[in-house]
Amino acid sequence: MEKKTVLSGIQPSGILTLGNYVGALRNWSLLQQDDRFCYYCVANLHAITVKQDAEALNRRTLEAAALLLACGIDPKRSALFIQSHVKEHTELAWVLNCGTYIGELNRMTQFKDKSQRHADNINAGLFTYPVLMAADILLYQASYIPVGKDQKQHVELARDIAIRFNKNYGDAFIVPEPIIPKLGGKIMSLTDPTKKMSKSDPNPNSYIAITDEPSVILKKFKRAVTDSEGIIAYDPERPGVTNLLSIYCTFTGKTPEEAVAEFAGQGYGKLKTAVADAVIAELEPIQNEYKRLLDEKTYLKSVLDDGAAQARSTARKTVDDVLRRVGLDATVM
Image (cartoon, rainbow, N blue to C red; front, side, top):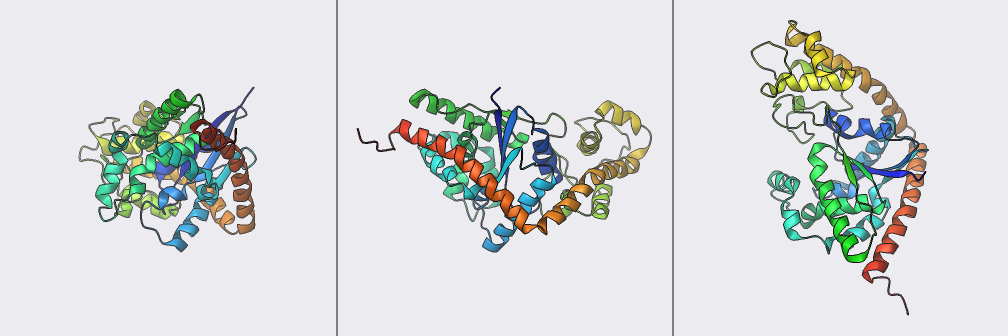
């Protein structure tokens, strides 16, 4: 049976939060199954749409790779690589740019959000970011794309680009499907539970970083916003309590109904401590492995070199086929 391909990536933009872990990293290791092959990249090309310090970006790129391995990525079952080490990403992105409409890019909500946050640097790369993401996906003929809810729009654009290209030039690309976690797919801010948990939030109490020490995690959960009613209920009208229950269920495997019954009449203090304990229990072994891997630079380099070689082998075949289809291989008749 032919294996299906999975592709996803994460930016090395500093702090990776509980939202990144639940929405992406936690699920990536689970997708490493016998009937699938996974390509996972540290998407450093996407990171430079925002001004970066070169030394810091290189360091964070390696840290992100180490964290992916610590979260369960197995180099024997997946290709883990750095995006910029596979030049085909940018090569395909240019071809796809020429088949993507300005109106499609104008509708991208992430561009609007980032433009507001970085008003002094609204660059062309920020605008065409979704096309590079489409190239990331389509290069590897990926069938499944594990993403958080906020990235679903980008996968939908990648699908539209693939369908249009296939219609115009023949079936060059597999049309991908997004995989979105049903529960805990979107972790909300601890200080403003109406907004997504974000590493760019200036208030560090709003997010749990994957590398936060256990004592820090406990302190942040204890400070999490709830409400004045003191009633444990899974209710969208009460986003603070619902967010805590969602996190608890995500890390314990319990249903919202089971969690509500467990904490009935106990107040928010018990719930917050229990959520912190569940998160710490899962993150602490990951943190220990992450620290170990950062001390094993030779091993880390070998994994990334091997992953890039695997990725280039597949990506080159796709790009050569695309160039031939659009008339850019300059074949002598």
